[in-house]
Image (tube, rainbow, N blue to C red; front, side, top):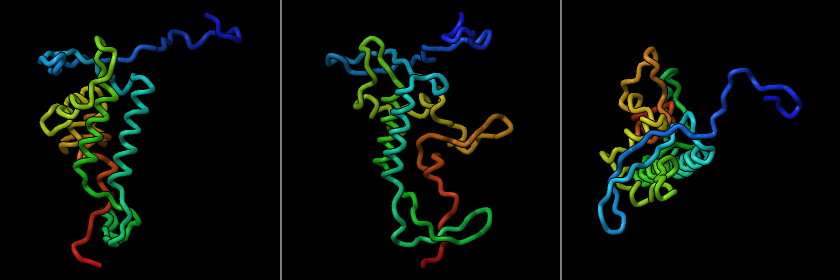
Length: 184
């Protein structure tokens, strides 16, 4: 089919206007009664631009919460060079930021097609808890790398750096340097 200027696009190329999804059976309360709803989760590699934007916004809020000025002048040691530095900003652990990131990512990528709406925040809050299944759902969809988070990823097996929430799993939570044992 010719384009506006009369030329065709790449031969055999099909562009997708439908997100790739996986179905997750999730028990929720609807109308005061427990009910299992099939939520459609969007894969990272073929999702809507809005899911991408909402996930990035969740990461931006997380970074804004956990990245703080290094007013205590904490020294850190680069594990590769041994160089001691005092960075201008450091990352601090925040259970609130972690839980909010997990929940917001779930809300961004899980959709109830019957209600034509995303999963509700209070439902995602339960899944976002430790042991609630957030890591499995986001791993299946490509938004979280469980093997990297557990330290079992092998680059030779296609393992990669984790790009998902977790105190020790996020590249932004993991400084490239480690604090020294001595004070300043």
